[in-house]
Amino acid sequence: MNLDLTNKNALVCGSTAGIGKATAILLARLGATITLFARDESKLKETLIELPHEKGQKHNYYVADFTNPQQVKEKVNVAASNKTIHILINNTGGPKGGPIFSAATEEFEKAFSMHVICNQILVQAVVPGMKNADYGRIINIISTSVKQPIDNLGVSNTIRGAVASWSKTLANELGQYGITVNNVLPGFTATDRLEDIVGNAAKRTNKTEQEASEFMKNLVPAKRFAQPGEIASAVAFLASEAASYINGVNLPVDGGRTKSL
Image (tube, rainbow, N blue to C red):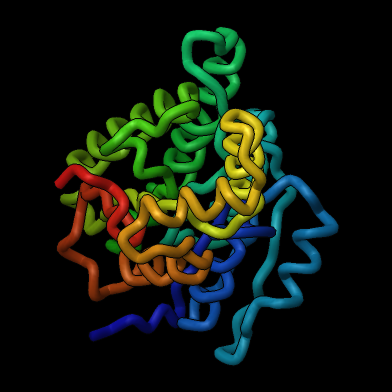
């Protein structure tokens, strides 16, 4: 099985923490040259130092805030003009939690911009290079909510579903060029985002955070939360030559929690 990513360039969004950071590190370990993409320059510099470079890679970063699509467009256009991006990891923080009925319309607009509009901007910048290289991997980190909506994540459920539909349509259009488009659907994963979800669940149910955490773990057949690196492993496989005939799928990495097929 060929998982070697030597001579491949990967742009990883949201790459200074959690799943994004774990993915950047693993792809670099497999030989890819990494372009980090996130909003906090100090964290970008810290992450850059942590990236493996045993295969002579020269990693770099761009500061880009996904609440500012124009800035994302400017930075990714520079990145794509400097080198071919073979692998694009679309990953950014999810919308705040809460019931869908009480969500302000502005919350939907902001989330749509961050997750759909920015994804579209990134894809339009990097796909021409992928076509020329006859190799492309677009991997979107979204959520199991596209298969089974999650209570009290109303805006997120809506926007994640939109990204999944966008992705499937894109997969149908780009498959002929040697470009695959797939979604990784993390379950409960030990990140800052999960800490917020656990905290909100504790307040809502009058439990301690420990009790809320244990309740959530018991919803998973594996009886534990995932580590970011476990999600990154699935991403790395989809980014490799070994996954060349996998296109347009939603892959849950959730310890078996999602009930649908």
